Image 1 (cartoon, helix red, strand yellow):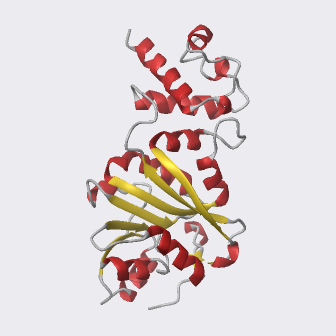
Image 2 (cartoon, rainbow, N blue to C red; image 1 turned 90 degrees about the vertical axis):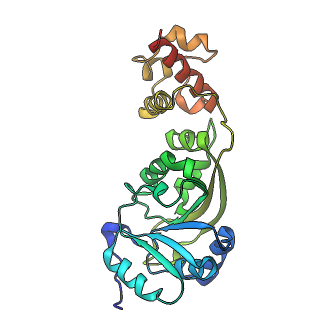
Image 3 (cartoon, rainbow, N blue to C red; image 1 turned 90 degrees about the horizontal axis):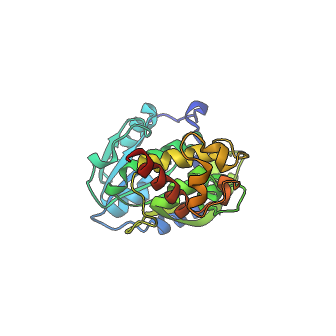
Length: 262
């Protein structure tokens, strides 16, 4: 087994702090019999204790050298299923059609598109626990009126409960990143938080609303809704997207759907 040098193109920062590792494992609280996939296992800081607790573990690693090294390290420790694929195109429901747990220390350069990718597989997922850039976790957790509240906040909070657990300093990694990290848990809602008729239209409305943050709704959504239609929903067309709740976005999307199908 060769020593692996972190690759910048994969955004690799390897966790080495034993206290942080133990804290993350405690937060995951893996139980035998659970189906769990670790995304971006790296050198195995979380993989080995997870495999020890579970006996069976799926891992998703795009770096073939890391995948090979980790497979060698885990021989005889349990049943490791290595998926050497791109996380942004991986079908998570191929592992389980329900109750899948997803965890990982995600490369900062793919964290946001990866979370959007996972939203398509929530019907298979029980919960998710990730180490992300602290700023991304704050955006995930932001509410209306907050300057960092945006498309990511709305789309994730519509589908999941967001729990920020704790922060992790740069010194816990090799090489040390230039930013702080944080651990977040995402739990899919059992019941919808808003009545949304068409989720594709909802996603379009949210995306257009935040595309140019300084635009008012009357300008951002002029191709979808008239000022009169927006006002009829009890929403001020002069508002910007950052002032709207999830229910406001749902009302706008449902109005678009009704208008389209009349």
